[in-house]
Every structure is written in structure tokens, then in C-alpha cells.
Image (cartoon, rainbow, N blue to C red; front, side):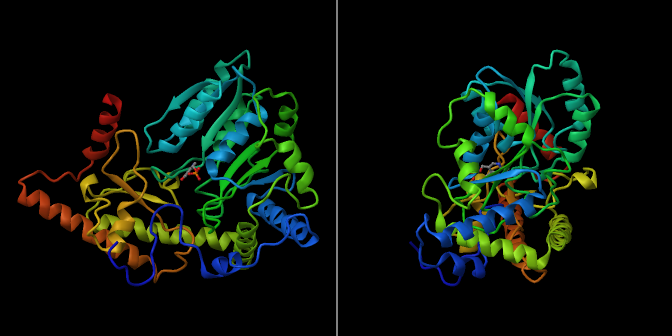
Length: 400
Ligand SMILES: Cc1ncc(COP(=O)(O)O)c(C=O)c1O
């Protein structure tokens, strides 16, 4: 391993940098998870998470698991084998959730999008209206599609469901939006919200969450998909006094308590405003560097306020051992998936807490197009920039 001087500066869409305050909180002795001190910790973080979900009615459960676990929990607690599920194909993560649902024995209808505009409330409404027999049991949407940087309009989707009076459960993945972009579990009538610790919540990976409506709890009573570890029943019963039915990730919960304090001190609205401001700064800088934004030409409200996807370096520039640490960090960003290599995402969530930190990321980005342009120039290859680029990638995906 080459010697790495200085602090690792993680600049991917998640996991994000963990603030020192959270790291210090995690670095405390593990306590007895059946003792009274733990019960207080459990109650505090469950109540704090309700505030972040903007839910007074919902029940929250916290799994010692990555976000994928909370996806599975949402499905297995509410649905039965052979149930029909409508999912919006917004990108790579929506595709993974769809694959999981199919593997669990659900019949999934995947409503296509161009990956640049998020879930289409109109198309969803049309499909639900056509379901006269009300066979669709659940609708699943990813709020912020980390792989494309597009945020879907959840309140509009809710209106579309209500407009046709469809009873489907509404499930929303907020893994890369919660505590970064405004989100309202109760007001938007969401039945199961899925979240993870490693993005806007400023924690390392390892915790995931469901926020559950009364309607979803009622559905759980008759749902027949097998579940044990993910079962809400015992989690909620134990959670009333702050405990877990099994060994919790105690030290991550210390970190969560501290992260919730930080969010409360800043105020959620101020956190959202900060991400909005930095996202706009980032987009302007990316355009000024001559790079194409995946969302270029999109409607402004649809642009993600969380991670951004930018036309980046080719794969072979990534993960090379001899690069500067920062370049490696950027190159490790999530591939956009399904034939869309060439686009790279970088994140400015979490500890990118002010304008002075943003240039650090942009300096790294700036080096990449220069390298790529020089390489193309020397190899006599055409410049790949331009509005046709995204269309080309969509075509590649279709042909894959
Ligand atoms: C939007 C979204 N959904 C789901 C996941 C999967 O979560 P995990 O990798 O924590 O299991 C991710 C991970 O980045 C994500 O960004």
C-alpha cells in the first residue's frame, strides 16, 4: 500500500464523511443492551428519528443492517407471495429493489422512465386507474435515485394515488434523501419509508430504518411472506421501552444520538437549505468545467439536491493504485449501472458543511476532464461531451 498522508477525504455519494462529533460518540464503551441506560438511548433515537421522518403517527424500527435490509423488511412485512407490485424504474437502485421483490416471489411491474426525470406521477396515476380490480398491492418509489442524482416528487405521486382512489401501499426509499432533502412521511401519506444511516444521517453504514404507517401495520397482520429477523412485531413491541429483540448495534446508536443532536441544532430546514445551496454551486462549477450534467436541461425542481451525477472519466481511469488518494476516492463513486458506465457520481452530503469544503471536491473533479481531454486529443479520438451523450448511454442500456 502506498503511504497516504493526511486525512482520508471521502467524496462519494455515500457512505459520507462521518463528523468528528459522531466519531467521538461512537468511541464509547459498549453498554448492556438490557440495562436501563440502553432503554433511554433506544427511546431517544427512536423519538429523534420520528422527527426526521416528520412523523407523529408512524412507528419506527431500527435494524442493525444496511439499507438493503430495510428494503426487504418493507416488502416481507406487508405483502404475500404472488402479490402485484408497481415500481418506478428511476435508476440503478430502483432496479436492485425490483430484483429483490421478484426474488421474494412478488409479481413486479416496472414502470420505465428515462432515468433523468424521476418517477412520473402522471404515468403512475394512469397505471393505477387502469387497475380496476385493485390487484396492485404496493407502489415503490426511490425518493432520491443515488445513481442518477434525480429526486422524485413524492407529494405529486401521493396526489396521483389519491386522485384515482387506489388502495395500494405507498413505499418510499429515502436512503440518500433523508436529512438532506425535505421529506414528510405523514403529510405525504407514505406507508413505509426506508432509510439508511450512511448518507444524510452522517453515520457509518450499518443501521437502517423503516417508518411505518397504521395502514402498513394493518397489512402486516395478514401478509404471508416469510419473515423472522425483519419482522416488525417484536421490534415495535420491544421499541416501546427502547429495547431490541436481539443485540443492537449499540455504538452506532450512540453515533445516531449525536447525529440527531447535530441535525436538531442546525434545524432540518437549514440543513436542506445548505444542501440546496451547495448543490447549485456544484452544478454551476461542473458546467463551468465543461462537463455534462446527467440532468442538464431538466426541470429545476427535479434536479437532485443531494448527490450529483456528472459525466466523468472512463472506467480505466478509475481505481488505479498510482493515483492521488483524492482521485481514487472520486473514482470509487458508484457506477451509474446498467450500461451507463462513463457517468460518475460524487456527493456533497453530510459533512460538506460549508462553502469552503466544496472547492476540495471541485479541484479533484477539475483534474479529471483535463486528463481525459489530453488522452483523447493524443489518441485522436472525438470529444465525448455534448447533449447526445446521455442519449447514447440510454441506447447502450437498451441494447445491453
Ligand atoms: C437510494 C438507495 N437505495 C438503496 C441503497 C442500498 O443500500 P445499502 O447499500 O446500504 O444496502 C442505496 C445505497 O447506496 C441507495 O443509495
